[in-house]
Amino acid sequence: MGSNQHLEIVPSNITSDGKLSYKNGQPTIQLLIGAQDRFIVPGSVRLVGEFTVKKNDTIIPVASDGIRMNERLGVFSMIDTLSIFSQRSGQTIESINHHNRMMSSYLSVTQSQADFACHAYETALRFPNYKAQQLGVITNTQGANSSSGDSPNSFCIPLVSGLFLGQEPIPLSNSWGVGGLNIELQLAPDQQVLFSADNTDTALLDAFYELSNVRLICEVQTPGEDFKPEMTNTFVYNSISSYYNTINSANAVLNFNLGLKSVLGAFMNVVPASHINNFKRDGLATLEFTNKDGSNAEIEQLVFTRAGSREPLEYNIDTLQKTTVDNETADAQIVRNYMNAVMSFAKIQRTSVEPSVYRNIDYSTDNTYSGAKTIINGGAAWGIGVSYDGISNQGLDFSSSPFGVQLQLKLTTDNPQSVFLFVHSRQTVVSSGGSIQVMK
Image 1: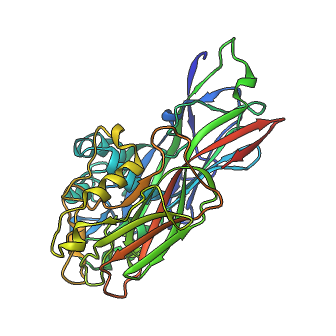
Image 2 (image 1 turned 90 degrees about the vertical axis):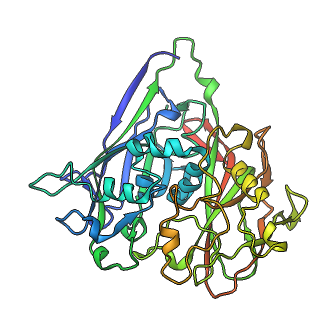
Image 3 (image 1 turned 180 degrees about the vertical axis):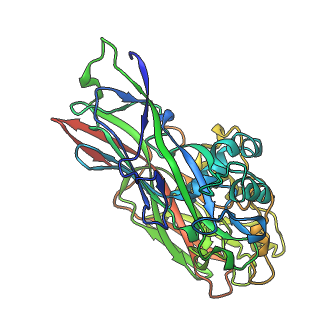
């Protein structure tokens, strides 16, 4: 490769005042990286800007308002959908719905409590203590401008996707690459990002979050003199696909038609459906299956299937809670498989998944949901999953075989559970004659 350069890109749909918010009719951020005979260094892509929470159009919240956001996610909670298209053809290269929920699992598994409490606060406004995050981000008045009332918190976050987490440079060329990139971010509703600390939504009726001074930064490489364009006609990358379903049964069966040929792993997280887009609840919490009174509905048995057959585990996972009703210990087999699905277990060097955030414990004894709002060390980090290929990177074919999960739960009340599934797969972009084809 030749020389490297840094790009700074302003959204193409920026408003006249430079501010973006879901409430004021700007739920989309569009970022265009034009076609050029260069490569993007994938790990260099960052979204930077300033994040502000307001009680209404002019007032910054105070602590007594009780406005909170998910401390495990911080500013990541604002990204509902991340989509990456070819600028030239408009073809979708990768699209991740419920990106903020995917990030809750990814960050929990791959970052330690030390990461969480140090640089994650500086870069993503995340902090493992919910009160400190509330005071430092939501009610922060240190940067307030007396004329506008703004109290911006600067952030710089990676855009996490399979494409941008890869190791291979991404070709941008019109003739031997993807033809430039159109990166589109759909912002999450205010009701999903913000919630009440005291089970009342009075202070949040007009509350919203706002972004300003948003831009994308990345590093690009210019090919050297010995570069041969025909070497880049095929570009292989990992992709993350998302799916959604609900269950409301003690014997639950989930089936998804993935339509993917090389599936490497699948993981999912859960929250009661009534908590989504609700100012009284944290709709981004990754809770266990939960009964209406706040008691958890422990898993007694878990089975992963492919076309109805047990695969890749050729046995049922019978948990500790199946034989010992009062056992509050997290089942080690479920925890390990979940972490292994997010990242190969042997490669995880640090994590914040621990008994205090991943365990079978009732969140509250009534419908106030109080326990789930104050779980220590950054809140709940629960999930389930399974890895299909952590060695060869070839994956398992689900193009015509449905992915399935069978669950036996202690779900004893009418309380629909939202299940968010994220599938990690291998995909290929083929460039030919100035056009591209994405092979899933």
